[in-house]
Amino acid sequence: MSYPKEGLMVSYKATQDHFDRKSLPAVIKHAHAHDNIVGGWRDPDTGLYYFDSTRSFPEDSLAAALAFARENEQHTVYVASTDINVKSNYEQEDIRVILDCDMGSSTDDLFALMMLYRYMDMKRCTLLGVIVDRMDRANADAVDVMNNYYGYPDIPIGLEKAGVKDPHVYIPYHNMAYARDIDGNVLFKRSIGDKGEYMDGYKLYRKLLAAQPDKSVTIASIGFVTCLARLLQSGPDEFSPLSGEELVSRKVKNIYCMGGVFGDSFEHDYNFTAAIDFSLKFFELWPKDIDIVFSPGEVGDPLYYSAAQIIEDMDWTSSHPIKWIYEFLTEDKFQKMWDPLAVINAVEGDDIFYRLSPRGFVTLTPTGETIFREDPKGNARYQLPGDAGWSDFVLKYIRLMSIQH
Image (cartoon, rainbow, N blue to C red; front, side, top):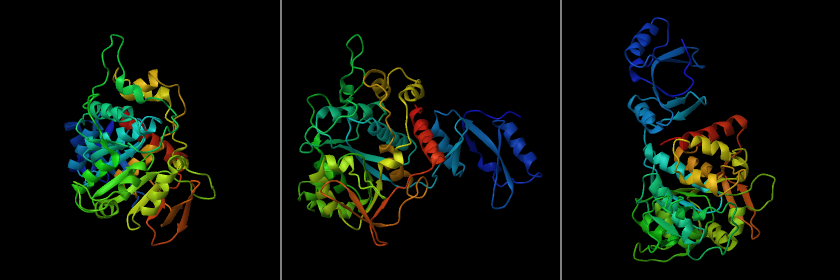
């Protein structure tokens, strides 16, 4: 008669639909033969209490727990230590993602990329490639480290080679790729050596898109839109006879974009303003029939993941690229988890985590303001801020991904 204080709880299919006193003994009998855990919940619509024999997984075994949930047709996994439910999504979708990031400045890019690896572990998506729209190969090398560390060394990486000159750097961690221990040994493995070349970002876009089925690709854009603008302006090449606009229109299903300032505020957006000429071209050429969901900064503002908490959550290893950055390269600069919100939306869909604005069209001014005009035929929506409970849930969800190994 004790309540589990930690563990990933998943119910067995064998005890589904046991909801009264007469059926409870069968649940207890099944639990005695398996894990000795009985779970229960009340359906507010019927007033019935449902009982289940339940299996517990360690909290760092989310992929295994979700696989078991799908086998047993359970919609969620319950995380006992944080009192949150994680959607199991046992009806799997074929989600093909390209991540477009400005790696090498704010650490939320690292967590967004980490989320995608964990989603792949759970068979939730396929990461087709990573585009780095902040110039300097060190930023691409940081992605290479992450690919190798999380077990996906073959994910292709593209690097912007004609973008924004010397953009502001908030947290200078790009040299993480070359970290060494006290004996001079390289800490983190890379697949691409110092003499290896990265494909130009827009060219990798063309290569990846050309190889995919029509209307199958989701783009998560969490940095500048330099490579996207260059892609849209590109012409036919060895990968496709289509222009960039035609290729995007044919292959891309939707895009989730970290950026924008909406509502009553007329502030400019950093990601779009830092590369304003590219951003204006992106807004001009992006096909009006492809959905775009913006993730404004205010949605992620309450999601503060402290350095101390990050290091504690990753105490399962002494050598971790993100942990190393927080231990040796930066003081706690109150990093907010803005970028993961676009990635979560891209994989989880529009109906699970977020409230979205009505449909409309978004235009960008030459000074970087995003202007939203409501229109039911529009291709654009934006995430609305959640309450304190929602912010707490999402941060716990990101933390849950951090402890997986």
